[in-house]
Length: 245
Image (cartoon, rainbow, N blue to C red; front, side, top):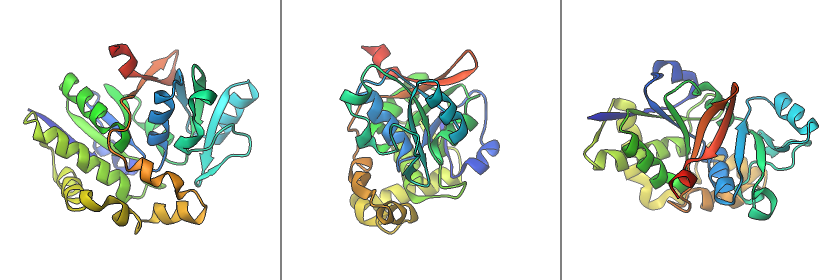
């Protein structure tokens, strides 16, 4: 039987890393929600980069760039980190470079794992189906906020734990998965009101960016599944779901 675990922060990831594990990187507000949406709307590929400086160099070379720091769009970027920015008209058939405060950092950290994908509530079932198909141990890497734990990513870890353990093919690896699962089961029926208490909701609200919160909490709105591979030494995300069509 395979196991699922939840890593509450990128700072803890060295304790969870194993080259044969699937790593599900999650940044519900908003990077992994935005990436799943961009692929749903036809983006061809996304290059996640860890720094603003690297994203700026891509922009100077003519790339389409999404870039955010501290919830705000970077001045040089074409897009910020709202899923509503990435419409089919703007990104369909395009290649994109993307950097965010927390999510793309976590992706870079996990790049050596056996399989690295991004998860959000909007593509929860697609993530679960991939894990069950691969039949490998899974760790959910919560992006958090500047290496600190956050509620929304932990809730996703609990939701995925609940879905996978319910199949009978996975068990919880330890206390972190148990905490996340119990948090999800306690609050799944009133996510919106629970999330309104959190730091990141208040951060988004203070910057008038909370318009996407309800969408970010929607279950299974898309079937896209961003999957990381390394092309000539460069991390690139493509949509695994398109390979199944």
